[in-house]
Amino acid sequence: MTEKIFRSIILTAVIVLIGCFIAVGTVQYGYFTNLQRQELTAELNLAAPSVERDGLDYLESLEDTASRVTWVAADGRVLFDSDASADEMDNHADRSEIAEALETGSGESERYSATMTEKTLYMARRLADGSVLRVSSAFYTILTVALGSMQAFFAILLAAIAVSVLLARRLSRRIITPLNTLDLQHPLDNDAYEELSPLLKRIDQQNRRIEAQVAELKRRQDEFSAVTRSMNEGLVLLNAENHVLSLNPAAMRLFNAGEDCVGRDFVTVSRDVPVTNAVRDALSTGRGAAQLERGERIYQIECSRIESDGAILGVALVAFDTTERAQAEQMKREFTANVSHELKTPLQSIMGSAELLENGLVKSEDQPRFIERIRSEAARLMALIEDIIRLSELDEGAAVPMEAVDLLSVAKDAADTLQESANKKNVTLALEGESAPIQGAPRLIYEIAYNLCDNAIRYNREGGHVSVRVQPENGYALLEVADDGIGIPEEHQRRVFERFYRVDKSHSRASGGTGLGLSIVKHAAALHHAEIELKSEVGKGTTISVRFPME
Image (cartoon, rainbow, N blue to C red; front, top):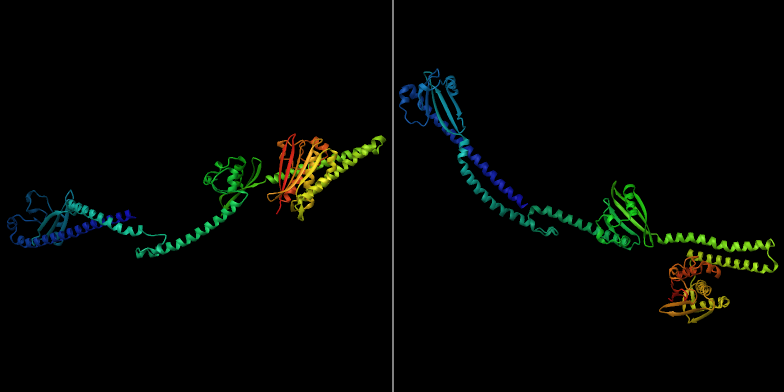
């Protein structure tokens, strides 16, 4: 703005100076031209009577006249000229001022020199005898006068420009300084030009609106950030050019990215081809989907196009952790297959033995053995069905009435029930500890103790030991079942709580287990918010600890 003010002042000064120079020169030139015309008219008026009276004698008596005097006969022949010989001059009948004077009595004309630097004014008058007396005077044209004055003009112009520069700088600084010191954050507090008051008021109103809008945007952004930060799902917002606008912590963990990826192309954040294709599909068709695996986790990627007034603004990408659902579906399929297999096996044995007995193909002395097989397989089938029913009840998540339970008492009941099984396998079953009251479902806690002890007996060696210990420990009630049996290999320890999962299928069949005992323990413990810990070493035994909260 300072430069514009400076240029405007300089330009104004130059234009005014040039205009003044032209105006003054034009007025002065016109004035002196009129004055010279008046002088020629007066001179002609004085000379005409004398020529009519004395003729050539008067003209020859003239010396050093300022004007040129010419006497022309009626036929155009030059009779006398003060500057040249009359005999050598051409006929002047065609001169405009002569012709006009012959016709009207007086004439006047102006003629320029070849260089346009000089102009001659001619004034003529017809005398009584029909001849014409002409007076002329030469003077510079306005162009010659202007060129002659150019040196003085440029000197004055440079002086004027120099003065204008100084004044322009001072004036521009005085004008700009109050503008540069305006406090636009508090526009109404400024003591500036009165002409700026409407502008400052509008700025103040605009500041208030902007502050309100910024506060509202910040509030919404904080709400959005709070919501997205607490989301378990990964959220990524992309613009139409596939650049990252925002991503929440869950998405950062999923794509192993940081906040510095905002503004970068999404390809630099995720190089997974299915995800890239899903984003491209969303931009072209409106929706895109993909599945992504990260280690043992499985994520479902859903992409949706964001539009406003028909314009594509970008893509919203949401990543759902579907690991548990996928595992649940897998477990469901495996459970269905295992249940079918586990139910079919004892039923086939029962049906086979029954057909042999029915058709009389079994000797009398062998019949008790076949009947015992039918009874044992039927008992195994019944136990399997009961375990499936228990797991179904636990899966349904139905409310279970809780009451005060002494963990030591429940563990003692389970140990007493299994004492006979331990004796048959020549396994020593021992219980020790102290009372540990908890809140729980007695039947489910009994199932936990029973299945842990039953597994410890089933998968033990001949003459082995099973130790059951109950005691309060750091706010928890500890139930620990330890054996010195066959042990569980490390690679199988993580999966032994899955339904129908068997480390050694042949050994499990021989032991008569259903493969659901530890799964029931896992679900029942989860219902009581209990923690399970397994320690095992092949050939040395297994220890399973369950810690129930005592509050």
